[in-house]
Image 1: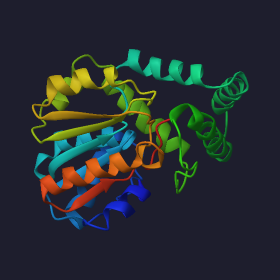
Image 2 (image 1 turned 180 degrees about the vertical axis):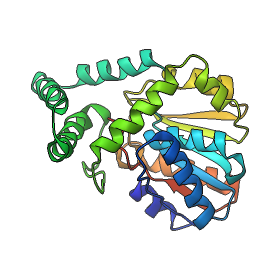
Image 3 (image 1 turned 60 degrees about the horizontal axis):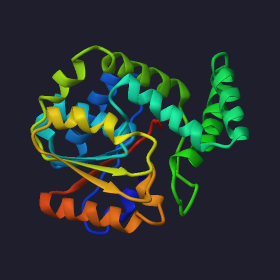
Length: 251
């Protein structure tokens, strides 16, 4: 999210907190403390991919620090939709890339820490082509790939996701205006996101970007529209901006 933070910093106050904890619960509390320590709450919280999911949990648990939510390329909220994400990605990859993907998956099952980091980077590089439409760059400005952190936090989320009614109970606590920005070409189907959020959140809107994948800020056909939407939202909120850094890549 660094490119988004830099762009918005021209007109708004911005912080870019980095998550380092290895459980969902500890990441929620870590982000909460970061906002208390560095921001003038309540804030507009912008999260991308896993960061969008974390932002929703934060707003549900600590309503006082969040004034608005903006969710970009959010992960899906049910197991069936998650399976469709992988199926969509496989359909978009070449046969050679699919073989590489499966090879990496098998190696990750037994890899040590150092090899896991390397394999995670390779896995992300393979999936990039399935996640974008017409990118201006391949550089996502990733600081560090943290496979073990990703694995543990994602497992925590899956346990909650697959517990019947759990996400509904969590997210129904949210009362703040919420904007969902989603690329039409994003393999994370909006139909795995929209039903739950529409049911739980009383003030949720959706902006669908055509010719756009999972990372709108690098998409040639969507970048300008994406930033115009963000600036409009921040202008309406009339509060300092606090993008949430997506430090655990959703792959």
